[in-house]
Image 1 (tube, rainbow, N blue to C red):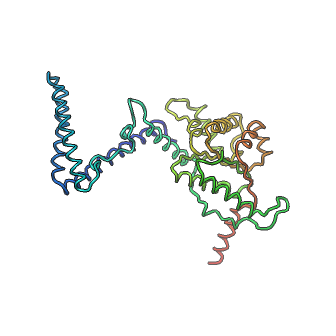
Image 2: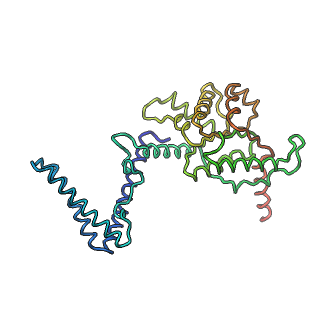
Image 3: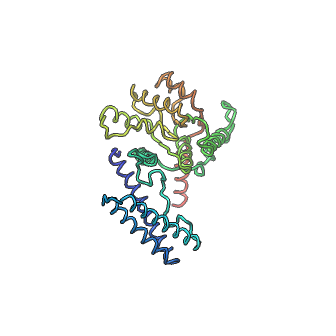
Length: 338
């Protein structure tokens, strides 16, 4: 896990990279413009000289300092106006020699009036999210990889529908959720036995959501409660990150394997705090569990389970373990070629 110092070090390095890229682009553009119109190069050199004159004038504290600064400023405006006219004349945009920064508020320095700029805060959250995903064994899946043929097509008398039809409907719901994000429902609680595709579909949603530029945190219940336990009980240093705040504020949070974490009062409280805190912010949450609603109630109590199922839409996964199908398929391919 990265410390706060390491996270900000990465963020400042990225901001420095952005500034260097901007300067590099400006230099390349100046070379191109100068080759087309040599007068632009001469005017640009004069502009850089006026900057030196301005610095000297400010440091001189002479009696006519204000007048000198005014004249330098006028020279600057005239030179810039000539350059812009020459750029337009040679079919180049007026801002060709001044590429815009990624953030116009702080010009990629990270601070505005000695306060952290929103771009720096966003950058820190992005680094934190990637760090959490890395430590949680986050991997990318897609809707294209989800094979509905693994689900039986025989009519199930108990449910009045075949597992294939039922899972086809769930697949469509998940796909629509990803397409509509962030204008979608509060999220889902995906229930069902292991190997039925809960993790696959939730990570396929995550992939689509991230491709739109939104922040996603995926973590197993055991991993997230361990991190939060370490934060609150073993190291309360200001150098640590408030993971609860990060999880609560992320655009989409996926909590996998609910019910597999160590059973404690703290873990129950932590999970309830996450879910309860995200609801007023309208931040969608996806919870995956192998436990039935009844088993969840036995483990977490009526208050937590009622909050989960009253807030999130329930998707019940049915069928047989898909990983067994994959194993059988791989074995048949192996023996076919041996």
